[in-house]
Image (cartoon, rainbow, N blue to C red):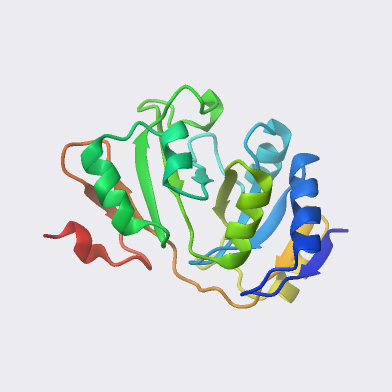
Length: 207
Protein backbone atom coordinates (compact mmCIF):
# COMPACT_ATOMS: atom_id res chain seq x y z
CA UNK A 1 0.00 0.00 0.00
CA UNK A 2 1.03 3.59 -0.66
CA UNK A 3 2.38 5.70 2.14
CA UNK A 4 0.14 8.65 3.02
CA UNK A 5 1.49 12.00 4.24
CA UNK A 6 -0.63 14.90 5.48
CA UNK A 7 1.54 17.89 4.56
CA UNK A 8 0.77 21.46 5.61
CA UNK A 9 -0.17 23.45 2.48
CA UNK A 10 1.67 26.60 3.55
CA UNK A 11 4.48 25.27 5.75
CA UNK A 12 5.41 21.78 4.52
CA UNK A 13 7.08 19.66 7.21
CA UNK A 14 10.74 19.19 6.18
CA UNK A 15 10.84 15.60 7.45
CA UNK A 16 7.93 14.59 5.23
CA UNK A 17 9.36 16.48 2.25
CA UNK A 18 12.70 14.66 2.65
CA UNK A 19 10.97 11.28 2.82
CA UNK A 20 8.90 12.08 -0.28
CA UNK A 21 12.09 12.95 -2.16
CA UNK A 22 13.69 9.69 -1.02
CA UNK A 23 10.72 7.82 -2.50
CA UNK A 24 11.17 9.64 -5.81
CA UNK A 25 14.90 8.90 -5.86
CA UNK A 26 14.18 5.23 -5.13
CA UNK A 27 12.11 5.06 -8.33
CA UNK A 28 8.72 5.65 -6.78
CA UNK A 29 5.55 7.19 -8.18
CA UNK A 30 3.89 9.86 -6.08
CA UNK A 31 0.65 11.83 -6.01
CA UNK A 32 1.27 15.46 -5.10
CA UNK A 33 -0.51 18.85 -5.22
CA UNK A 34 0.23 21.67 -7.65
CA UNK A 35 -1.35 25.09 -8.11
CA UNK A 36 -3.94 23.75 -10.57
CA UNK A 37 -4.73 20.17 -9.49
CA UNK A 38 -3.14 17.03 -8.11
CA UNK A 39 -0.55 15.30 -10.29
CA UNK A 40 1.23 11.98 -10.68
CA UNK A 41 5.00 12.36 -10.64
CA UNK A 42 8.29 10.48 -10.77
CA UNK A 43 11.99 11.12 -11.29
CA UNK A 44 13.03 12.06 -14.86
CA UNK A 45 15.38 9.13 -15.36
CA UNK A 46 13.04 6.42 -14.06
CA UNK A 47 11.63 4.74 -17.14
CA UNK A 48 9.80 2.06 -15.16
CA UNK A 49 8.10 4.68 -12.97
CA UNK A 50 7.02 6.59 -16.08
CA UNK A 51 5.54 3.39 -17.50
CA UNK A 52 3.64 2.83 -14.25
CA UNK A 53 2.09 6.29 -14.65
CA UNK A 54 1.16 5.42 -18.24
CA UNK A 55 -0.61 2.29 -17.00
CA UNK A 56 -2.46 4.13 -14.22
CA UNK A 57 -3.83 6.68 -16.69
CA UNK A 58 -3.91 4.28 -19.69
CA UNK A 59 -1.84 6.69 -21.76
CA UNK A 60 -0.39 5.83 -25.16
CA UNK A 61 3.18 6.58 -26.19
CA UNK A 62 2.10 9.86 -27.81
CA UNK A 63 1.11 11.46 -24.49
CA UNK A 64 3.27 14.44 -23.58
CA UNK A 65 4.49 14.47 -20.01
CA UNK A 66 5.44 17.75 -18.34
CA UNK A 67 8.66 18.66 -16.54
CA UNK A 68 7.70 20.50 -13.37
CA UNK A 69 10.59 22.86 -12.56
CA UNK A 70 11.42 25.04 -9.58
CA UNK A 71 12.45 28.22 -11.41
CA UNK A 72 13.38 29.90 -14.69
CA UNK A 73 17.04 28.91 -14.54
CA UNK A 74 16.11 25.25 -14.29
CA UNK A 75 13.81 25.59 -17.31
CA UNK A 76 16.70 26.75 -19.49
CA UNK A 77 18.51 23.46 -18.82
CA UNK A 78 15.73 21.51 -20.51
CA UNK A 79 14.19 23.94 -23.02
CA UNK A 80 15.62 26.17 -25.74
CA UNK A 81 14.55 29.67 -24.76
CA UNK A 82 15.42 32.98 -26.45
CA UNK A 83 15.33 36.40 -24.79
CA UNK A 84 11.78 37.20 -25.89
CA UNK A 85 10.45 33.92 -24.51
CA UNK A 86 12.40 34.44 -21.30
CA UNK A 87 10.72 37.81 -20.74
CA UNK A 88 7.28 36.29 -21.25
CA UNK A 89 8.12 33.41 -18.92
CA UNK A 90 8.95 35.86 -16.15
CA UNK A 91 5.30 36.94 -16.26
CA UNK A 92 3.98 33.38 -16.28
CA UNK A 93 6.06 31.81 -13.53
CA UNK A 94 5.36 30.66 -10.98
CA UNK A 95 1.78 29.99 -12.05
CA UNK A 96 -0.74 27.60 -13.66
CA UNK A 97 0.78 27.57 -17.15
CA UNK A 98 2.37 24.80 -19.19
CA UNK A 99 4.61 26.07 -21.97
CA UNK A 100 5.82 23.99 -24.92
CA UNK A 101 9.40 24.50 -26.15
CA UNK A 102 11.99 22.80 -28.28
CA UNK A 103 13.85 20.49 -25.90
CA UNK A 104 17.57 20.50 -25.18
CA UNK A 105 19.73 17.38 -25.23
CA UNK A 106 19.29 17.14 -21.45
CA UNK A 107 15.77 15.77 -21.98
CA UNK A 108 15.60 11.98 -22.48
CA UNK A 109 14.29 11.16 -25.95
CA UNK A 110 11.41 9.07 -24.63
CA UNK A 111 9.93 12.22 -23.02
CA UNK A 112 9.80 14.23 -26.24
CA UNK A 113 6.99 14.74 -28.73
CA UNK A 114 7.95 12.05 -31.28
CA UNK A 115 7.92 14.36 -34.32
CA UNK A 116 8.49 17.88 -33.04
CA UNK A 117 11.07 17.11 -30.31
CA UNK A 118 9.29 19.41 -27.88
CA UNK A 119 8.70 19.27 -24.13
CA UNK A 120 6.14 20.81 -21.79
CA UNK A 121 7.52 22.82 -18.88
CA UNK A 122 5.91 24.50 -15.88
CA UNK A 123 6.74 26.19 -12.56
CA UNK A 124 3.82 25.82 -10.10
CA UNK A 125 3.00 28.24 -7.33
CA UNK A 126 2.36 25.70 -4.60
CA UNK A 127 4.38 25.53 -1.39
CA UNK A 128 4.44 21.72 -1.16
CA UNK A 129 5.42 21.30 -4.78
CA UNK A 130 8.15 23.93 -4.52
CA UNK A 131 9.54 22.33 -1.36
CA UNK A 132 9.71 18.96 -3.14
CA UNK A 133 11.50 20.48 -6.12
CA UNK A 134 13.99 22.33 -3.95
CA UNK A 135 14.86 19.18 -2.00
CA UNK A 136 14.95 16.98 -5.11
CA UNK A 137 17.21 19.42 -6.99
CA UNK A 138 15.75 18.42 -10.37
CA UNK A 139 12.36 18.56 -12.12
CA UNK A 140 9.56 16.10 -11.47
CA UNK A 141 8.20 14.27 -14.52
CA UNK A 142 4.45 14.77 -14.18
CA UNK A 143 0.96 14.43 -15.59
CA UNK A 144 -2.41 15.54 -14.24
CA UNK A 145 -4.15 13.03 -11.95
CA UNK A 146 -7.12 12.21 -14.18
CA UNK A 147 -8.17 8.58 -14.08
CA UNK A 148 -9.31 6.73 -17.22
CA UNK A 149 -12.86 7.70 -18.19
CA UNK A 150 -12.93 10.77 -15.93
CA UNK A 151 -13.20 14.34 -17.18
CA UNK A 152 -11.81 16.00 -14.05
CA UNK A 153 -8.78 15.41 -11.81
CA UNK A 154 -9.16 13.67 -8.46
CA UNK A 155 -9.27 16.21 -5.62
CA UNK A 156 -10.09 14.18 -2.49
CA UNK A 157 -6.96 12.54 -1.01
CA UNK A 158 -9.09 9.87 0.66
CA UNK A 159 -10.55 8.94 -2.73
CA UNK A 160 -7.01 8.89 -4.14
CA UNK A 161 -6.07 6.48 -1.36
CA UNK A 162 -8.96 4.20 -2.26
CA UNK A 163 -8.35 4.34 -6.03
CA UNK A 164 -4.55 4.43 -6.15
CA UNK A 165 -3.26 3.05 -2.87
CA UNK A 166 -2.23 -0.20 -4.54
CA UNK A 167 -0.42 1.31 -7.56
CA UNK A 168 1.55 4.36 -6.31
CA UNK A 169 4.18 4.63 -3.59
CA UNK A 170 3.09 7.84 -1.88
CA UNK A 171 0.02 10.08 -1.68
CA UNK A 172 0.64 13.59 -0.38
CA UNK A 173 -2.48 15.14 1.14
CA UNK A 174 -1.99 18.88 0.77
CA UNK A 175 -5.64 19.88 0.94
CA UNK A 176 -7.77 21.10 -1.94
CA UNK A 177 -5.65 22.63 -4.71
CA UNK A 178 -8.09 23.01 -7.59
CA UNK A 179 -9.85 21.29 -10.47
CA UNK A 180 -8.79 23.29 -13.50
CA UNK A 181 -5.92 22.17 -15.70
CA UNK A 182 -3.14 24.54 -16.62
CA UNK A 183 -3.34 26.94 -19.54
CA UNK A 184 -1.10 25.50 -22.29
CA UNK A 185 0.91 27.70 -24.65
CA UNK A 186 3.06 26.62 -27.60
CA UNK A 187 6.18 28.77 -27.61
CA UNK A 188 7.95 27.06 -30.50
CA UNK A 189 6.80 29.64 -33.07
CA UNK A 190 7.60 33.35 -33.33
CA UNK A 191 4.16 34.15 -31.91
CA UNK A 192 2.87 32.19 -28.87
CA UNK A 193 -0.08 29.89 -29.68
CA UNK A 194 -2.72 29.24 -27.03
CA UNK A 195 -3.47 25.49 -27.10
CA UNK A 196 -5.72 25.18 -24.05
CA UNK A 197 -7.44 27.68 -21.79
CA UNK A 198 -7.22 26.61 -18.16
CA UNK A 199 -6.57 28.22 -14.82
CA UNK A 200 -3.91 30.62 -16.12
CA UNK A 201 -5.19 33.95 -17.51
CA UNK A 202 -5.24 33.61 -21.34
CA UNK A 203 -5.40 37.38 -21.90
CA UNK A 204 -1.61 37.55 -21.74
CA UNK A 205 -1.60 35.92 -25.18
CA UNK A 206 -4.50 37.76 -26.77
CA UNK A 207 -2.89 41.17 -27.02
